[in-house]
Image (cartoon, rainbow, N blue to C red; front, side):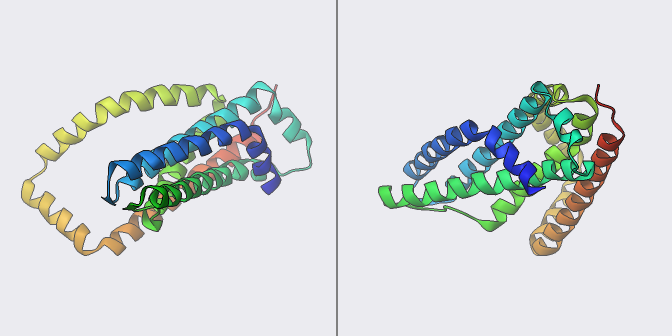
Length: 223
């Protein structure tokens, strides 16, 4: 299974080189723009999400273009392992790019003599959950329809960037302010419980989508 993840890393090695350079540029931009604070973590979130998405899209498109699935299915490897390796790759990419950014942030802090936040385990966990949810939800469709779906999802994602803020604003306005304040106060007073609930919900969604992906891929005939 880990060899399958390593295969994807070999495919995206040029992307990784670009990612390292890009990470250092963003880290220096973040450190230079502030003296103290958490702005670097804003750059970290954007960078890690963007590079993970770019890496997954490239690796999956490369596999489909070069008919890699035909080769993989000819090997004595359980189909479930092939699917699980894709989900494992999401986590590995996330760890890799966040560590790269954290290292770049530490170096930029030292060079520019600033004290911006280089890394934050809570931010990392949030990024990891987001990546697993976003791609976990996509993968059943990917294994059903191929990498073309990921390109369609990218277009939908760009549209949501413009639609969601306005929709969220309307929802907030429609909610009773006293109830909204009560909910926010409860979240603030019970951050650990709220985080645990969200984590468990995310874990269930990821597990369900992974099992669905395994079922789809196992029953799919490659022609």
